[in-house]
Image (cartoon, rainbow, N blue to C red):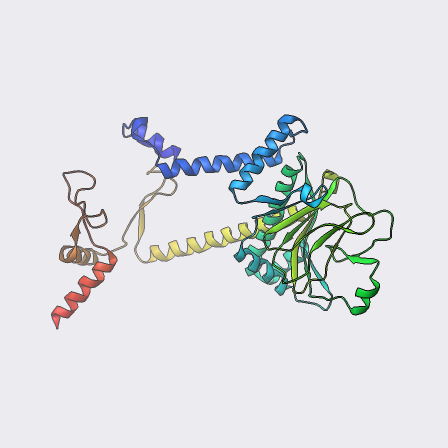
Length: 386
């Protein structure tokens, strides 16, 4: 674009006042700047616990709200350092993620887990799942970024990301009567609520993004020291809940399949899991291979066109633009005359310019012929012969 501007000003005598960007282009550039600011901010480490830092957090949470991501349950609602938000997952994305679950094959276990490496292997077996892997990573990053802003953490790393699906289960009559000291956790493990100390780190958080709705049950229940319910979150597609790893909780038996993206975030860089970077490198390699194949296909097609008599008579270097060229030989003289005759027979003045026959200057008249009208003209000519 800058090269075009330079060409018009230096070679054709235009002034800056003649070269004004369209409204759509200006809005696009401004949108890109806002997104770049948001993404660059995610990588910065200068956010602190000062009043100014809090204002920055409020600002970015408002930006997220404009994108449709907002808090639906506050720490006050959930009685702890927890929250629930919505707006990061659409219906069609849900279907994509469930395809990944189906592709890996359902086993007999009650809980099925798909890690990032396992998802990569699935893509290797079925390239159509590539978009699902990208979505898996994108959603994880979106939740990580939002959580870091919510808790005012300047550095937030992903310790683990996996997709967890829990089959429909029901408590037996004996379990309902006697109870159980073992309660299901989000990762499929079982917690003994009688133990005095829970495994976890005060600087680590668990995030659960619900992929699908559950007919009944499947709630995440937070418990107090006496193992009584303090608060709970119902599974709803697109909602995600974040809480500390030290929070005592359990998952109630779901009446239908319950699938989530389960993430663990930490403030310690040493615990940052390389799986995400490995997955991104894998996807970048796929992109490079696609570009290489596309380039080879283009070269083959160019050679085929050359064999048909088409040649490049002006290149991008001569026309001051990499994506410009002039070709010759695409049509024979006879084919050109046939198109001219078709235009003379059915062309309309101003067609393509809303009837304005001189859209550029008053010294020329524009006559156009759409493909649809050309088909009708050809049909009329064929009928007139008979």
